[in-house]
Image (cartoon, rainbow, N blue to C red; front, side, top):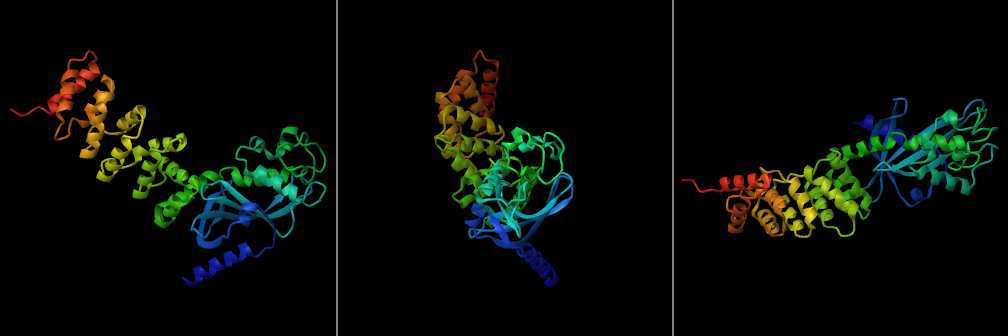
Length: 358
C-alpha cells in the first residue's frame, strides 16, 4: 500500500514540477486537485497513454494528459511540453504550456493573440485540420518547423495560428482524434461505480453534464438508476426544449417500465404531453406489461381522443388489466366490427381476454 501511494506521489510530482508559461482562460478559473485516478487510452498508433483525473470543488472530474512532443516536418524540429485538459464528456477544456513559450516559423514566441487564436482552433471539433495528413499541410514539401519556407495551403492557413501550422495541427490532433470517445467511456466507467460522482453530474447547474449522462445511458454505457429515471421524466415534460425532450424519449426503453414508481412518473407526465408524444409513450410499452392502476387510468382516459388505430394500440396494452372500465369494454365492442382488420382483431382479443368464464 505504501509503495502504491509513493508511486502516485512521484507521478503527481512529475506532473506538477514544470513551470507554467501559458494557461488557457477556463483553467485559470478552476481550482483543480489531483486524484488517485489514473487510466489509459490509446493513441493513433495503438500505444497506451496515461490520463489522470482531476477534481474541482464540486467533485466534478476533468481528464488531464501531460506530454512532450516534437513539432516538425523534416529538418529542424523543436520539442514542446504541454498539458491537455478535457471535460469529463470528452470536450476540450484547456491547454497549459510548460517551461518555454511556443514559437513560430521565425522563432518568435507566441503573443497573447497567438495563444488566443490557438485556443479558438483547438476548441473546434470540426476544424479543417481533420481533413489533412501531417505531410499535406504545405503546397510543397519544405524543411523546417512549421514550414520555414513554402506556402501553407490557404484553407489550412485560415484555420491555424499564422506561422505555426504544424504546432496547431499537432495539438489539435492530440486533442480530438479518437480521444473524445475514449474519454467518454472512461467517464462512464467511473459513473457506474461511483454514485456520488453521478449525483454531481445530475445536480450541477450545467445541463451539458445531464445531457451527457442520458446520452451514455442511451448508448448502453451507463446503468439506469433512480436518479437517472427522475431526470428522464424531468426532461420529458420540458417546454420549448426539443433536444432534451427527445433525449428523454430515447431513454425510455432503457428504464424498467415494470416498476411501480416508474409507472407513477410516467402517468404524471402523460397528461402533459401532446397526442403524438403520448403515442410515442404507448409504443414504448410492451403489451405484456403489468400496469399499475394510475398508468391504466392515464391510458384509457386518452381513448376518447383517439382514432380507431390509436385506440386499438391502447386496448392491446390494457387488455390484461384485472378490472376493466365499463367504457373501455364498450369501446372494444364497437371496434370489434371495424372494417380495419388490425383494429377489429385487437378489439376481439381484448374482449376474449376480459370475457367472464362460463
